[in-house]
Length: 214
Image 1 (cartoon, rainbow, N blue to C red):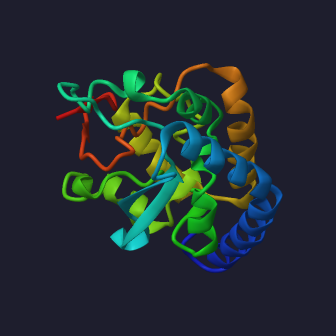
Image 2 (image 1 turned 180 degrees about the vertical axis):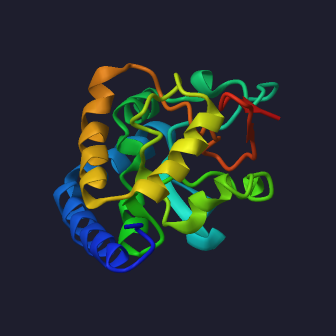
Image 3 (image 1 turned 90 degrees about the vertical axis):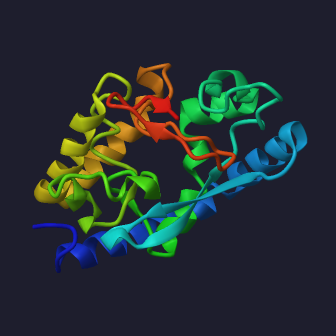
């Protein structure tokens, strides 16, 4: 049963709506605290917004907490991620707390808790027909690719995992991915390698191994 077909679609959407709404309530003090810390230490904006392709390649605005400062004069914006990441930003990325605002995307129906991560709009014309099937379902806050090895898995392999998720979806698989996502920050100190994008709105690309380049 695929997540884009009934009854899988109904079950998955009902779980997303209930779980995301509950998580927004439970984590509301955390959301407020993080927002204040970013505003106090880094200024505005607190929330980073970027256009991403969703289900059936429909464009939506994805939200996350801002984790970088603007590039200083002379700094290369796509090679200074670590340098420009703020102290609070590094913590947010390591713990994935920067993704919490995406719960709003889940409640609105633009995203799911679990699914292929939404990449840049510029990539839409670059996918093979097979890899383009990752857009048959709603993109997720986490996914099979994210719990299968962050920087240790090549970019093309992660696209393969996205398609595998679409083909092999089950409610049990979603629960397993959610569990692995919770324990992932405690297993590895590394930050995400699947989608390295500048959270100040600069357009970057990914090389074969998921590394940012011009």
